[in-house]
Image (cartoon, rainbow, N blue to C red; front, side, top):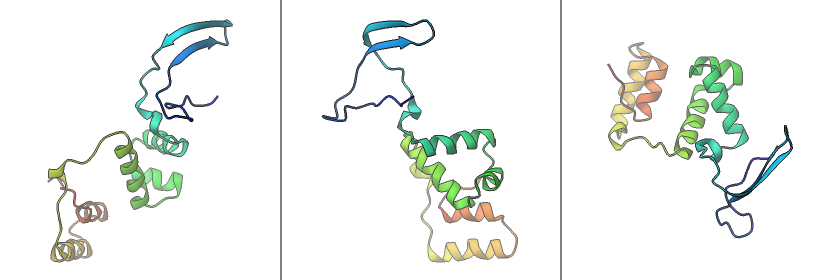
Length: 131
């Protein structure tokens, strides 16, 4: 079954549902119906597959790395893309600007084993680390 488009392919106006059909009991209803709000309707088939995998793996990227054969940075980027599409943007105070010296300090800490690779990636991306 095809996904219900949100806009007219000709003029790009909002579409309105005027007819619904039940295949089980062969009932048809006509009128003006508001389509149910589906925040995931903006996601592509691949993005929905990614999201379902994320849920199935309980949000654990290490399990997703094995299942999808993708690297942590790729998984993180795909999740960020989905979050943006759903309207979730990182708060300004969650993003830090890093100098070259800050970046070198993070890499040095990683090399010394003081922080994990995941923490280093988050810090290099400008995210605050709790703790």
